Image: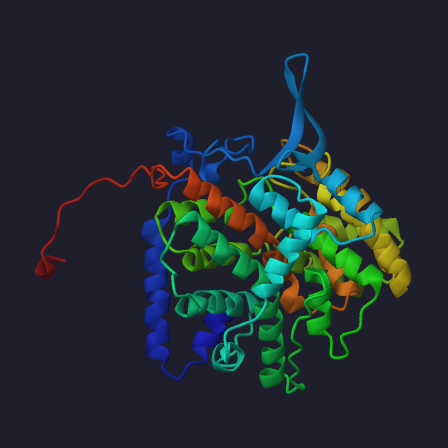
Length: 460
């Protein structure tokens, strides 16, 4: 409706009227009877009626576990996520106990299939640092020209433009795709942060500062260093941002953006085009943009509930959400539920343990307690209001938005941060598809409209 209102304010009102009329015509002649999906056993969204994904490929990169077989019967279990066969919880525990950051190690693991030795990790970090500089005048000529209000669009445009600065952009041999992938992993933080700072300078009239990355810093540290005017951050802030990057780096291969990478790669296109397609997928609020919805939902909740610890008031608000009488009227409690997990999302569980420490440091423990209360109340309320086929629990987006907010990261960078992490997984999937490339991915669609005769123009 916002778009329609904006169009209606256009002085060329006849053009607006034509667009609206054609839009109605499009809807009338493109709406498919929902019963036909069941009649022809169509797996809408590549899922069966229970919501389980249709097997469309094989991968060795990561695995999601949400059920187990007990006495020959499949039953839900606590969620598990494995990177190259290794439990993510064990990976996190390992680098946390050793008091170091883990994103670079995870990127190596996802791309090469094994944990790096200390020497190999050091060399890998040096390799990333060697790619962590943009082409001459790229910031001025590309990022600072026509800045977009949406950083994912800025990121996509920058990635596509990097094609023009590559001497071998169309070479899909494994060594060259690996080179391109490492370059993108290294450059994503710069593209996102500089894009945001440019937008703020031109649209919000703030001072423009461009901090170059430092080779001795991790990806998480460099993000905070480049983003903040004084480049200051605490060790806990960097540790939790690094953790968030680790938990967002990959997720099972069947997620929308990773599947997009496989689909577009199978067509034989270049790395920059394939990654840009994945960025477009991740931008959607049903995918990477979900944590923004969570954050905005909680802001609305806090404005409408005076006492955040009042369970009855919070319950009333959640019921209103489900009945489309609160927030955006979608009928959703954002951050609750997942396409695969039922009892728990391991990423949310890991993140929650560190969020409480950050809330203590930031003096925002009451806000954290509100999130915890909603996490406890929402599954029972959803179960009472809706007919659901599996359990409901908090997903990673439920807490990641709160983490970014407490880190004083701007809302516009929430989804780009997801992309900064997920480019590691996307790169692994692109190389996997190239290595095992056989056929272009082409799903079948059944035509359900009756055939009709052509009518000459004068007789219509």
